[in-house]
Image 1 (spheres, rainbow, N blue to C red):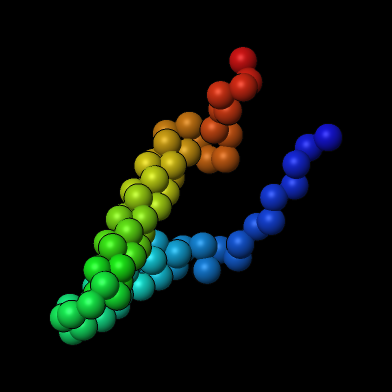
Image 2: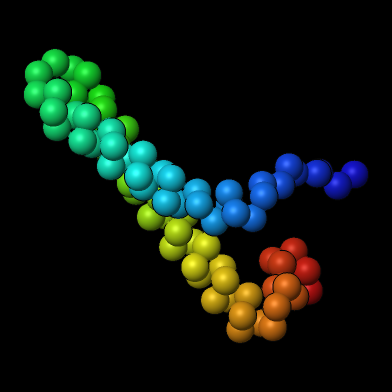
Length: 82
């Protein structure tokens, strides 16, 4: 039985890397202005994680689109197909 995954609308899907990156920058800014306490460190780590996650998603999507373009549209071969 095939597993059905929920789909995200294309405009929201295109914004995800930017949302993660901006959220990470906001958390880093909050950690910078909160100069004492353990909360500053937690905010800095969360902000760094958000920035890295936004970059990872953006770069993976760019590579996927380039690969899809090389193979001619939506006919990217899956690893389990021969």
